[in-house]
Length: 121
Image 1: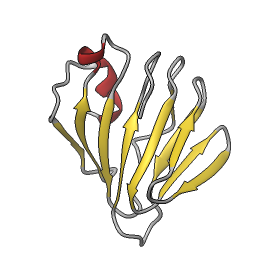
Image 2 (image 1 turned 135 degrees about the horizontal axis):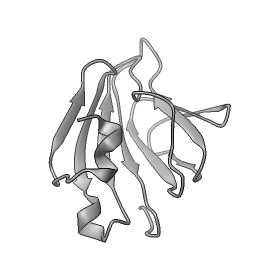
Image 3 (image 1 turned 180 degrees about the vertical axis):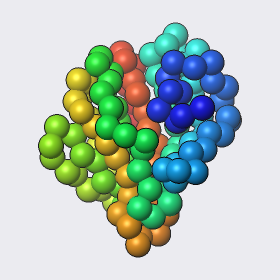
């Protein structure tokens, strides 16, 4: 299953999803079913130069990234943002978004939280 489809699937906390093509590996921490569909938290690990499967839009959801290790690049609505450890980036609803890591850097990890009406800490 594609990591980008986690929000709509019947996921289980602790489940591992991998995409060898894009270099993503995700571990579900909080699944939507645990929060009345309001929250999805996934720890993502991405190899150098890796990225999400493609540009996407969350129509009603704010996407929040908290960088744990390495560097994260997020492009949304034509702007590229870069973040290092202990940095949080928020992407507003209805924004066209893609994310990944720079090539030739160490692997990166970050938590991705997609709250709908809940806060994401």
